[in-house]
Length: 138
View 1: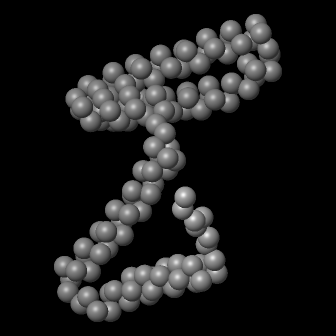
View 2: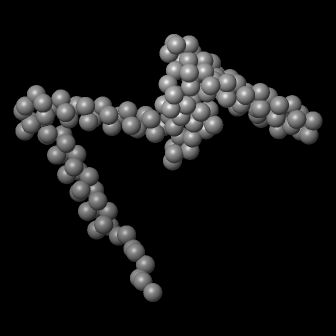
View 3: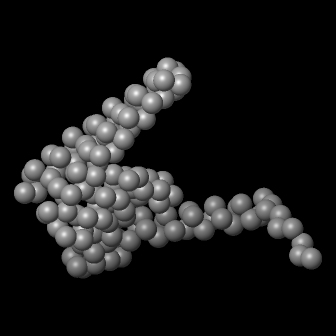
């Protein structure tokens, strides 16, 4: 039987010191990297970090990918331009599936159907965006 891990004030101070040391190191990095190559590499690393965080938010926190995102990105990467149109067809099918669910829920509970309407509007908005990308990509 192992002893429980207790996080005390000393551990918190050590973690804070580590974060502050890393921030100080990264903040002074341009001062001691004076070559254009090193600076441009660090700038690209920062940009890619921001893009990666944005992609994480776009794809869903914790890696949860919706059906539309999986179809759109997966088929687009797999077969290119024609995959965008196939993915758009899948997303349009999702639109109709959500509408059918709203209609069926309306028979059981109008409140349940009403709660699905904002989701359906959001899916329609996503469909519009995906259609625009498919048209612009050719």
